[in-house]
Image 1 (spheres, rainbow, N blue to C red):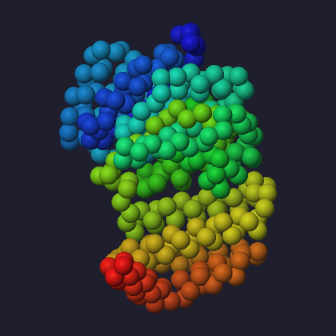
Image 2: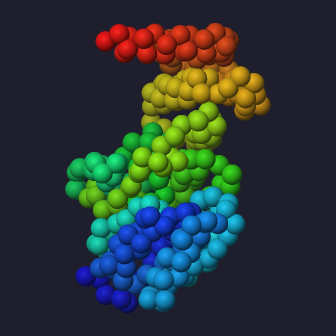
Image 3: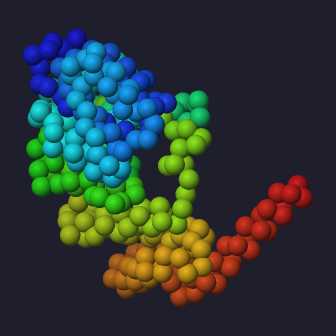
Amino acid sequence: MINNTSDLISIIIPAYNAEQTLAKCLDSILSQTYSHIEIIIINDGSTDSTQSIIDNFATKDSRIKSFYQNNSGNSSARNLGIKNSSSSLLTFIDADDWIEKDTLELLFYNLQKYNADISICGYYKDFFQKTEKEFQDENPCIYNRKEALEKILYDSEIKSYPWAKLYKKNLFNGLEFPLGRIYEDYAFIYLVINNANKIVKSNIAKYHYVQYKNSLSNSTTAMKEFHLLLGAFERFDFALNNKDIISDWKHYNNFNAKIFFALTKSIIRLRKKDEMKEEFSYVLKRIKHFIKTNSCGVKFYYLLKLKTLILIPHLYSIFLIATKKKKRKKEILH
């Protein structure tokens, strides 16, 4: 166990209508073997008993601080938490999730041992009472800034989730989670990593990422897909402005062509007629620009699909509907 003279860790928890999960989340934090912590809970305009749960825990443990804001989203809540944190170290936990009792100890130990700016651990996916473990290898990996950026831009060994990571607070200087965005993590965490010199990642799973059947994040809408695609465009632009990050641009162009196609296709499938005209126009403009300026090395298959999307999106939409009906008919007949 690490003693209480170690560095203070600020744990930031955005909470919106979390009455079903918040108690378990807080219990897991209060049972940590690393106890030198402050817990900052941002009630994001909850309409249920979330605030009562926060108040009940706060009366029992002085390490808990709570703040209230009108419903403004996770980004605003996390930004408020960062501004009100007292420590030089930060971590984020979602109110739906929980952590193993030695999570903070592991993250802090690796941060100190390897003199890193960010310490990452593995995580479990708890989906509908079924648990899957991510990152099986238990050997820590050490990355410099360039290596870590390539990993997160490929969404491979380093993910864009803000949680399951311990950060030095100064990495957030000049940065804020983007407001009014869906999938804000995807559009932000790589910028924090860009401020780091060394990142250590342990593949030991300690964080429990919990999803429920009625969770809003399980539903897909055209606007959600647009925000994800917007983040993909921004990440690609960042890579273009920092070309030395990517070791194989031919491969990276193909990687992005695949993402751009999949998300644009999803938007076409999900959006209603005359919906999101301005957003969809921007998508088509960006894809045209990608084809014109970054198609070198992109497989003909991907280029053809992208060109089909931008030239005849309406016909592609009809094709998707027809394919869906045909598939449904086949399922009924069999």
